Length: 424
Image (cartoon, rainbow, N blue to C red; front, side):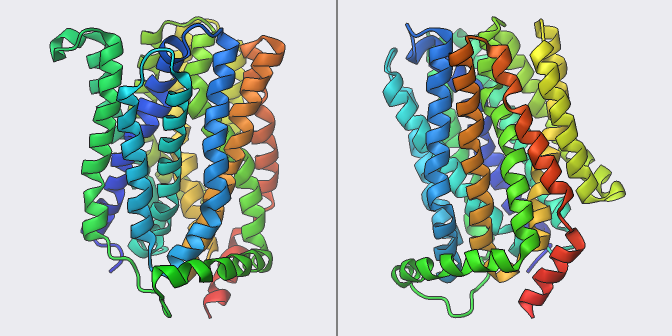
């Protein structure tokens, strides 16, 4: 049954669970630890290149399999099964980072790639469950609530991890390096524990003509071809996906590479961690407030304003001179990050046929993650070639510009009409 409090909270708690990976690992300690510990001996631009390459490789893997897996999940009523599979790939890989010793950046990168695949792959099936949890009337709120809960959950664990890092002896740890390694274990445990409600209390909608998983794999190939044809038929979906491909790449790149960028500018690691905490705790009310703001001006205008804001943030990042500026940018990112992510997810839910949610969210995540191949690699390559981290940050501005222009062409009313006609 849709719109029940139990199902909404259970679904949103998965955001609370896996956001610990996005904060402590992806945005926080992994970039810091990778530069200072695992990639010890490499210069600043080389380690940026390695990190960008690892992010891009994870994105390529997820992008390659997303639509196919989504088709299988729809045909076999297997969204929760695949969510479980990818979640625990991420959980085990993240926990495995505890064992990686200094200088072994190749193994660290491999486990990070596996963890990122688990994180991103799981989100395909988590997102596709949204249409079964919330009605179209409440989908914007539920999507924003999930992101808000994710920010506060990920932020709380990250805060604990920061305290462990700064005062390791309070936790019986020898030094900050040991604290960071333990923090990876804490993420794995947090992710595993708070994932339980989505598996226990979310009922996956039954699919007409559901088949066993082995047959669903065969049917997945056929359904993938049909989905491509459907996207061509639902032209508004195609235009939105292309726009999303570009602008969400810029958002993901800011999330993944901000700490690396600050480190390259010579900012103290403690200041960078404080900035990440600012993002998390501002983004919690920010996601809910931005949902309210978009409800007043319209969801399309809300997304466009967020894209413009990210363009401004990117330009300001180029001129940033000190840690105070970094804190201001963190505040701005926190205000818009949750809003653009949540509204994009719910905007897309309005355009797609409900019974094909897995397939269509497979393409949604494919384009988002395949686009993330461009941003981190472009930023890392720019830094490597020019020797300037400041030039690298400007390289992602073009992604917001192209995404915004394409998004202007998306006709929401026409898209909703096409989705209804498909159901008929």
